Length: 483
Image 1 (cartoon, rainbow, N blue to C red):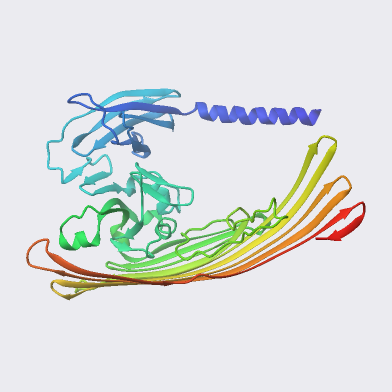
Image 2: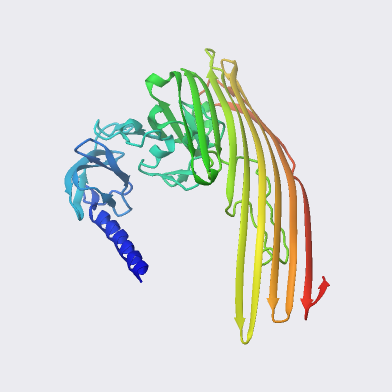
């Protein structure tokens, strides 16, 4: 009885603490409108900055009806900024207590300026250009040893999913560049989850035109959403990086290293990651191998278990990236990345079904393991053959090998009948991919008149071997028969 009372008091204290914490914060609501006709301004960039230390505590965009709301705001004095292309940045000072504060209408007036570049004042760290939204990352406060992803999570209009994928203004970010150069090919996560936040000066969200449009100067309407990270002036030349190591209970460990050497146009980076805490700072890339699956009567109802269905993942990964621009304008970029993920998953279940006077019990155990190895190599060279002709070559090679083992046993009992069985499902797959893109472009004297040759080649093959063994025996009235 005494223990139950102690537990009840403990639970009450937890909820009281949580409730007290919730009561220590407030919320801010408001609406952005046009000063001219009082119509709502939708998708305006909103930021809330503390008047105490100028830190950005919240940011986002107004809804289609112009309204906005920010929750969990600590008590204090703040300044709200509203920015929108073609309108002057509007501000409003408020004080937040332990309740919801309605800032009312924030009216924005016409800018009346050339809209090629719109600077959202020195107070708000945003610059809006025709196809670019630029944020001043230095004004975003993040924890010590934070990475670029931590900064992105605080930018208005930018969403970072649990798996690290990025959306900006509702569109998927397909590429991340560093000072205009690709970083480890087309895997955005290798930049956002590894590069230290304290190296970042600006983050640009760009609607990038197609290569053909950039070359010809004629917009073909094709766009892709990318991010460009500009580094601080002091880090464009020299070494920088970070490293961390941790060890915990049950022999859990997590180690990371990131070393960069920049020399203006030349970039060289090395990254490494080693852990058994289900953490991956990279995307899967192309050629991901097969996990295990397969049918069977005993594997928890007959379905196989996928490699991603939980368990403990041991990750070993590393890679290097190189990029340079030469005096004649030739650009080269190359990267190699290796990762190995070993996933172990053990499951046990007991099920009891009652139907009338009969009772059915089912015991299941399963031991699953998937070992996946992946190699990725990317290279790019873009150079001029003469003053009006360029050639770009991009070979990409990847190789993935996956080994999966699924061992399961089960036992079903119904009155005088008992069924015992085991299943072994083993698979091996290899997936090599080789691709190359050749692009030759020539520009003529007349503006917009160009000719190009684009050749794409690819070779890929998926070779898989599987082995599925099922053994089952039935016992009726103490007489066992195999099936």
